[in-house]
Image (cartoon, rainbow, N blue to C red):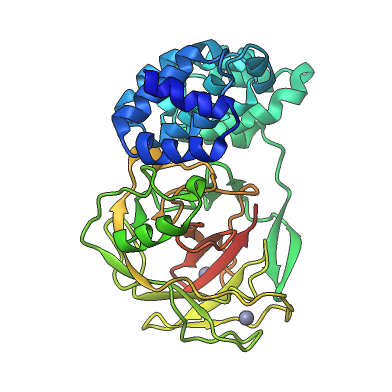
Length: 419
Ligand SMILES: [Zn+2]
Ligand SMILES: [Zn+2]
C-alpha cells in the first residue's frame, strides 16, 4: 500500500516519467499487482483524480473483471462529464473498456444505461440477444423520440442475433442506394438487389438471408519474443508493447510476415511490400490458399482500397487503378519475420482502437478507426470478406491496414485508415 502511495505521489507531483517507469516496470509486469493497484486507485479516486491507470485493465486477468465492474457501478448511469464532476472518471473509463472486453457483465443493466442514454457504453449491448429488443422497438415506434432512433438501431445491430438484424432492417431507413464499382469507377447506384447492409454488425442481407462479412474464427498474430524485446528496449515507457494482447499462447500455425514483395507496384514502379503469406487456411477459414498479400505502402491512400488479382499459386498482381501520388517520405517494408497464429482470447474478440494494443489478426470482426467500411469486389460486385487487419506495433505504420478477400474471384483489397 505504501508503495502505491509513493507511485501516486509521483503522479501528483507531475513527475510523469518516473511514474510511467514504475508503472511499466513494476506494476504492469505483474498481473496481481496490476489488479491491486487498480483497486487501490478505485478506492481512493476522487481524492487522487488520477486518470492514467485505466489502461491497466489490459494487464489485469479477466477473472478479476467482475470485481472491477462492482467498483465501477456508481458510474454506470453517468456520461463522461457527469462522472468527472463526481470524481469517478476512472470508473467511467474502466466501464468503457469492460463493455468491449466483457459485455456480458452489463446485460442485466441495459435498461438503466438506456434510460440515462450513455452513448459511451453502447458496446454493452454486444451479444445481448433479444433481451432488450422490446424497449428498443418501443423507442423506434415513437416518432417523438426520432433523435434516439439511430442509437436504438445501433443497439439492435450489436445485440448480434438474426431477430435484431431483422428489426434493424424493418425500422432502418430504406437503403435505396448502394456504392458499387461500375466501369472501374465508384458510383452511387440504385439498390435493385434487395441488399441490406448492417455495417456495424458486419452482416449483409443478400439472396434472402443474412451473411457474415467477417470470419467468425479469429487468430491474433503472435510476434516473436526477440522482436518485442528489441522494440521495447528502445520505445518510450508508454509505448512499450507488453499488455495481454501481446502475450498470447501460440499454436503450431506460422506465417511469413513483412519484407519486400515480389509483385512490384505498377503505380509508382517501386518495390511492393509483402504483408503476409497464408500457405494454408487455419481451422475455421473456408478460403483457397496459398495467398500472398502484398501492397504498396507508398501508394496506399486512406479510404481507397488497393486491389490485387491472385494466381493459383497465390502470387498477386496489383491493379494499377490508382493515381501516382508524390510523398515526402519513403515507407520501409514491414520487418520481415515469422509470426505464429494464436487463437484470439475472448476479451480481445472485439477490440477497441488503442495506440499500443496488438490489433494484428486474422479473422474476427474489424476494429474500425473511422467507422465500418466493407469493400466490394470489383469483379463480381459482391461484398468481400473482411479477412485480416494489421495495426501499429513493432512497425509503426501510423494506420490500420484492412485486408478483404473474394474467394471466388481470388481478388484481395487492401484499405488503410489513419487516426
Ligand atoms: Zn506504389
Ligand atoms: Zn469477386
